[in-house]
Length: 184
Image 1 (cartoon, one colour):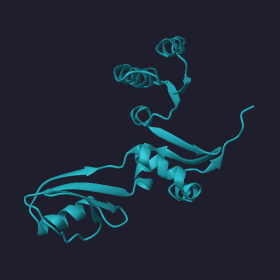
Image 2 (image 1 turned 45 degrees about the horizontal axis):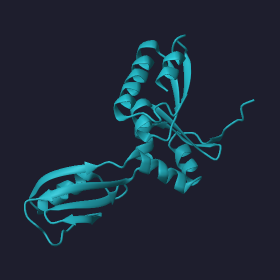
Image 3 (image 1 turned 90 degrees about the vertical axis):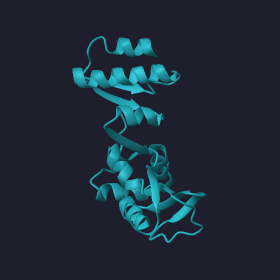
Image 4 (image 1 turned 135 degrees about the horizontal axis):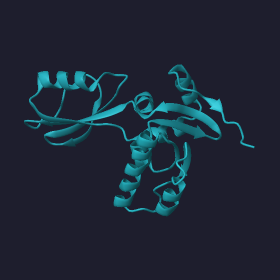
């Protein structure tokens, strides 16, 4: 795969199509290939189209994403936009100074209880992490907080599971939902 990539760039193409560019590579080789592709895109202004099931490749290489389901573009845009649109769930992990058997939580619910450390699940429709943590901080002694962002793989899975209802959301958010044309 590395040799094929090297040969592909010999003639300094304007556009290159890569299908699963890091498949079968170890972690070090994958990272080197990603760095090479990013540098080539930046320095040579080469447009690189990547198809991949490796979400780490997508997150590290792509500034724009097109999600296709059954020949229809379900969503396209920036990865951050897609994550914000569909990755509605958040899970702050809150560490308290002492163990509390019950918490007065303004929204969301405890999804994992490890004594002084609790994970509280909520959706962005209910409020923000800052609002939740501020509210808890007014009632309880908090020693640490970390917020777990939804993994892009989870977001993509949700898009496919919800099917065409995503098309309407994408269109209303300025993304496109259109049928792909067969290439002749």
